[in-house]
View 1 (cartoon, rainbow, N blue to C red):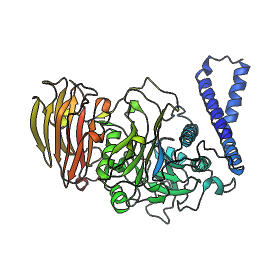
View 2: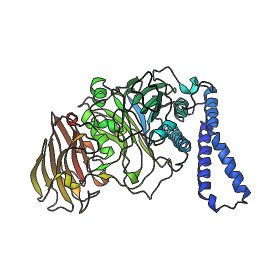
View 3: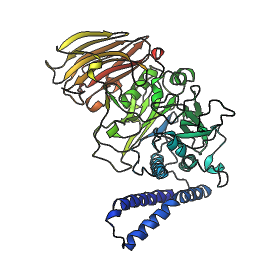
View 4: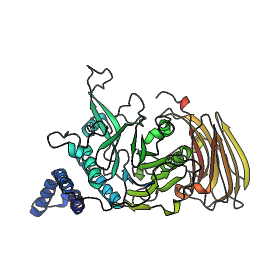
Length: 539
């Protein structure tokens, strides 16, 4: 462990020194010999850092040196300790995609090290955390060969210098990290599959398929699962699989299924994973951009686990200026054990918690809630306090919006296939914020999916409220939709989730309702979001 720990510290220092030297390069004198020597030495070391890393890992493995701080992981065999990494990507080296990828890969290595140190048995990473691919040319340079995930290949030990594909650096490194730190690793990268129009009429003109791909290594570094994202969200570089892939894998940690970001909005493959394959936990990586007032990432994640009674390990990208954040560890039917959605400061965060290996039945009691291990480790990279949260917003005027004017009332708002009913009582005689009952059914112009909205939301003079002081002694929100799936959410200031233990959710057929009494927290929003996939249109 000491050798790997020192390696990570040394490499981190090298990258920081190189980056800082580039910032001050213009101020250095051309005769500054010391500056030139140091810069050249750092560049030389960085050029060969990957070889050095492999040598260190190989040495540790050959001599039986465990890189894990906590190998015992003593706890109830019915639970697993999971980690999710909300990562603020490094993107400064825009002219050097290889450099960007390797800096981010080093950050993944550090997160794996820290998760293992805290006893985690699995870690989940976000979508597009290693690099971004805005077009097929950039994607083809960064995407990798990924072998079949049939449990027969451990890239870290099966690929030597002669047989290792030169384009599979990430796959090889993650395999070594999983094996070295004895931890399951779920990551999302790009897969490149060569093809020919001579034998495959669907082969793209550039001669390869490019897929947004989630992979899982077990704690020996073996590749045990591979999933291609089914529902792309403005990803011109990527290809869509011919059929939705239902990928599951049974492990000592439970049965896992896989979804990537936009997939969570669709019946397939999600419902097959939950109701046909009966997975215990879904591994979910995302680059989610929040959209007010319904679709913050953590609200969707939590509502998904409550609606479908499945565990969820969700890791997202942290990019506040573009509205991207939100990660968590969620238990079936309960919502979050721990989550992050801090709209006031940016930075990477590692969340660690114990969850049941098997998902509970809907009415099963969980006696271990109070004794669970929960840990949040902030700023594995350096925080960026200057970032401002800039989410997307749906304008108030697109909804049927009815303003609340009385201390207590019953309001009904219907539009097309959606009917939204609200009964409420305000704790004090008057409002400090403006509240609206919103109802809407539409085909979203950009993605052509059919969405249905029903919600009570706080509003300021010009935009949706982040904070309020208003409290309600009673609320019951009922939505009647076309279709029978919905995502419930109740949030307080800065969109923090109100614990599921403080409100009730009932869903039968196409009617869903949220209710509570004597809530002692300010109320920013109570929302039901529903999809009617049958009415989706062709994009």
